[in-house]
Amino acid sequence: ASSARLPRATNASSATVVGRHARSSYNHLQGDVRRRKLFSYQKFFLRIDRKGKVNGTKSEDDPNSVLEIKSVDVGVVAIRSLGSNFYLAISRKGELYGARDFGPDCRLIERIEENKYNTYASAEWRNKKKHMFVGLNANGKPMRGKKTRRKNTATHFLPIVVQP
Image (cartoon, rainbow, N blue to C red):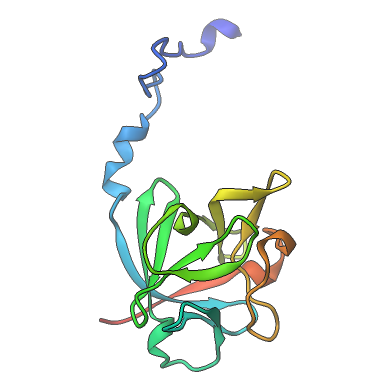
């Protein structure tokens, strides 16, 4: 049974594994830009205001809720508000904020859940080895990443297409 396994590459710098795609074969995914509104399971649109404050709004035509989702790596995205020009970021402590410039706090892991909603977790920081997620509570206030879990519906968002 062990002879049926495919041999692995021995060179550590080479990302190739015989019979599998190398990471470098996903270059077409980098730089993909989508304009979306993130509608939370709690019925709020995620927004980043002109001061960098992250919260939810019920208004469908808030210019700060139009977001640009750009893939920066395989499964990793950067989310920027087109109205305020701030990036969505999660600090080491798990606080959501708007960052003027793209940095490590702005790297978010995007995952499509079983219920067709998306979750966004910090690619950089964890709390006790658990991911910290972007989430809005029932009042539209940002949740601390340390209190969030993937299965919690407060962290679930539907990306809604925005016409240019």
